[in-house]
Length: 151
Image (cartoon, rainbow, N blue to C red; front, side):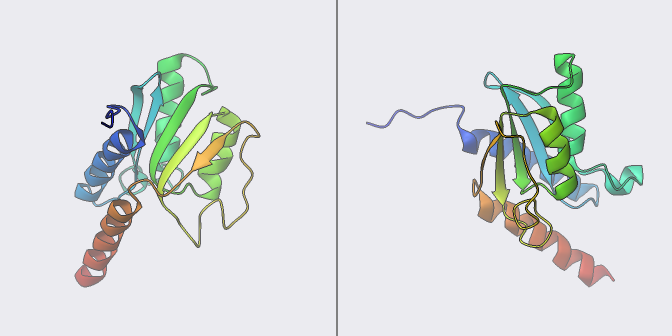
């Protein structure tokens, strides 16, 4: 019999997808993120670029700030970021400086993602992708289809 792990990557990615849904409801590009330490969510965030009129207000950037505030320091060692879409170059750079231990993303961003752009992560950071990629990708597609139909 398989033992179900209550706090696996899918569990936390579902929480990131909830954040992405919140962004969607606000008219933001639906990307969500959570940061986890010791199986506990210490930060939740979603894109706020439109509301804040700030190109740097990506979900990952908001989550990094919230997690650092929670921990009382700028380094996110022994933390994992769950984000619905592969981080962009800017977010990957910030994640490099935070020294986050692990990044788990949903869908790839073939054009603007850190993998295609060959952005370096911290040498100790591990990254894995494809967790609930279909759900993350479908949410983005639905958002942009609706956006195009409104214009």
